[in-house]
Amino acid sequence: MLDALRALRAVWAALVAIGQFLAWLLNLLP
Image (cartoon, rainbow, N blue to C red; front, side):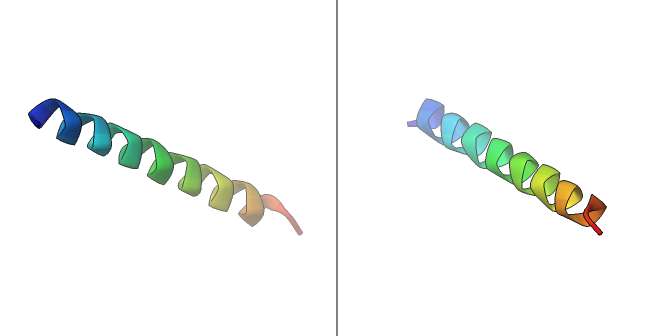
């Protein structure tokens, strides 16, 4: 159970990082 929670948190962190990266890219557009 704990391993599943750790995996879920890792996936969530990855999604947040990707979201922030996409927002940064959109911010560079004119």
